[in-house]
Length: 66
Image 1 (cartoon, rainbow, N blue to C red):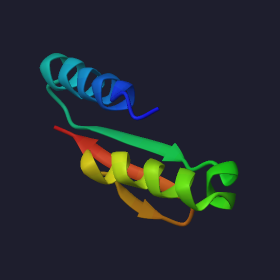
Image 2: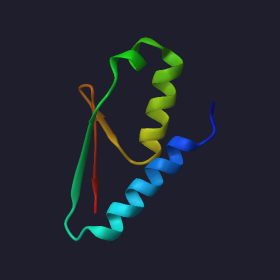
Image 3: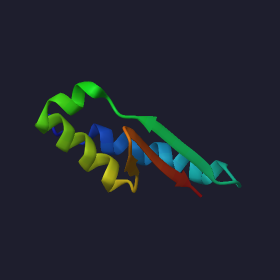
């Protein structure tokens, strides 16, 4: 646990699309109800998404890649 794999994957994802796109991209994801049941999972999940600038709202996350 806490190996940093999620951070690496998200960083590569954003790097790839930032370099390839000329138009902004809206990234939208639905948050897992399973993570909502466990405080530790929810905190870890929210931490990584906040770290990458996602906004939270009504069970969804969003971020624009430009």
